Length: 208
Image (tube, rainbow, N blue to C red; front, side, top):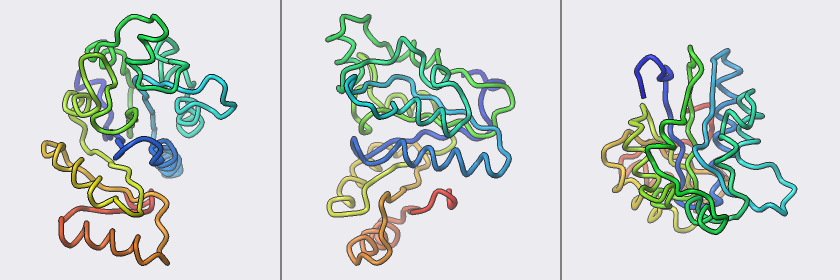
């Protein structure tokens, strides 16, 4: 990515797995930044989805939050109407193979972008291309920060630790989604990750 095209702050949002709320958290971050009068842009290199669902796709939700067209967030030829990992969906749809170089080349930023956000698909080691997973994408993009979205409940310490070990090369903040301050489990999970593992853990988009 040429330096001239790079946003002032480039963030990649990843998850400990699927359905942890990456898009919800990403949307909150974008809306918060826009309230601060920052110029934002969101990118979803590839997305797969249930064609029978009436719910908006991730690209459409991100577009609503960033003020862009959904087709700018994710190129139309990277929309795969099968709810599986994008390269698997591409195979089942008889589409051309997804190559990481091509996905990266398609990530373009408007001039003067203050916050550029890239949301991955699935978990960290989920394949986003035939020749790379989301960790490979993070490494190639070299973001300023990675935001790891995790569920606040049971099992999150293990899930977060596994991801953090795989992202030793990146600056990572953990976002505990669906955090309930009244839940002893949630509070203790957050305390453990902060005090035992020395991680930066947030539960509000305004703190990022």
